[in-house]
Amino acid sequence: MNERLRNEMVGAALVVGGGIGGMQAALDLAESGIKVYLVERKSSIGGVMSQLDKTFPTNDCAMCTIAPRLVSIGRHKDIELLTLSEVDRIEGQPGNFKVTLRRKARHVDESKCTGCGACVVNCPTRNIVQPMEPGTVELAPEFKAKVTEVVEKHGKRDGPLMPILQEINAAFNYLPENALRYVSQETGYSMTHILRVATFYSAFSIVPRGKFIISVCLGTTCYVRGSERLIEKFSDVLNLKPDETTHDMTFTLKSVRCIGCCGLAPAVMVGDEVFGKLSIKQIPEIIKKYQTGQKNA
Image 1 (cartoon, rainbow, N blue to C red):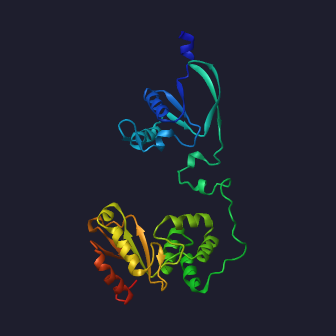
Image 2: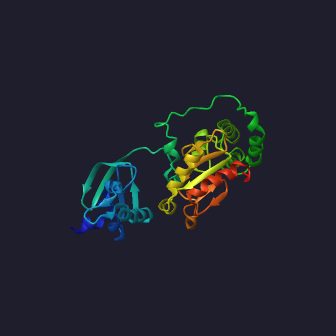
Image 3: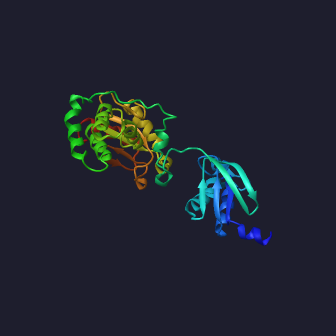
């Protein structure tokens, strides 16, 4: 390389392809003090390896191999990630060249993106948004007083949605659709956003539930100690399947992944009460206790 060409070198490198090879090349170059532009035509890097469970021939976990590189690339000051981009043309010569990229529009401000995924859920090209019917939402009589009180209580504060949903859910043991539409009308939150929150948290429900919610833990510790047999026994005694409610609206049976009582496995929650190291012989007695009113909600 002649002296003139060396002086004209920009000192930046372009890596095309965000697979495991491209990721490692970008990191090696950046660690050498070179500014790196990593170009990937998909929306994220990782390539095929991110879709694998294990890698041949060692059977190492694919994500265990790729995850540290993903984090390092995201944090490295000398790596600029250009996703949804493709090389259009290259001009110049080795050491001094110009690359033109063609990038797909994101329609979001990348500097403000937190990765929450709201843009995907509300994408107008993937979802047909059904607007609310015009007019004022009228609450059903059994909900009106409480829902109005809760909205007035929290409506003026910043971020009122969660406390509003929590109090409505606590009052009625579920989130009535009419009440959610009223919350949307009064707070300005879209129904899409409200429903996304309401369906994300297991503590919330958009369908009516019983007075007592029976939560059987199926986490690893409880499962290996027989919690599957517990949920089967509850189903037999109450004559209902998981996620169903008894006709008298007394019990709702559901499975959960953890209730934070691994030391008491297998564990079950009925309402707010925890029953640890439970055996199937105790289940009829527990149900009878709640049916006869010895326990309060």
